[in-house]
Length: 299
Image 1 (spheres, rainbow, N blue to C red):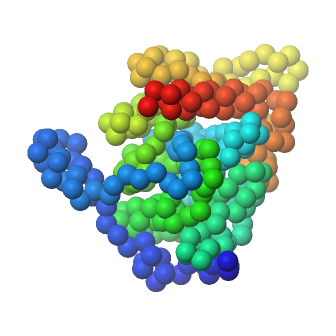
Image 2: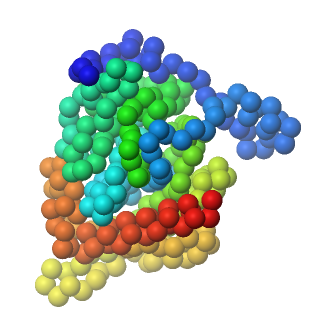
């Protein structure tokens, strides 16, 4: 193995320069068949049993916080876990997982994800110099493909993928290249966030990816003195979850130290393992593991 060089612009254009097409939502069966011939073939990641996507459609609802704390909690429950940062334009996993080193590469030119807190991590933030990533769609899709299939992920029980807002290139590329075991939806309780999260859920339904459930993030505040729960919004989450036919897995409170933990690169669940926040993620992790086990039994 040797230390990979930081990718410069020409390296990236050469490495990530492939096109990926997607099906038009209104294509008739014959058109769909013709267009599908040029789509990439889904193939499992070598050594990875399940791929779980953390998604919303809405920005600012805490997807990365959810992905990071879920990953370290799954690892604490005995799972072999990886964490892929799918946000090409605004990667946050390196900061929140306290990972900064450039990945090593093996003799097959595959990246070897660095490990922290028992979790293998890979992000575009580890591969490019600081500054904005200004790319068009095809380059973004190629980058996701490289991070997925150009890395030594296995052996893993679960690869957790943190995704960017929206319903575009990253989500389509993930679903086209690897079989996804399920999607964990994240939303805050206000209607504006829930409606966009619904669109994200419907997108994955269209792509035939099962929904694991919904995490309501920043749901409430708990008083330090009396432990009274202070709700921050009229709870429309359960109503939307019922319409989608999924469970609200947990309602996560806002924690005072949450921002500081993220900035310091120490997942909250590890620093405060007895907190209600950490207990919620213990519950989410158990439910994800059970969902994946049930899915394997049915297949």
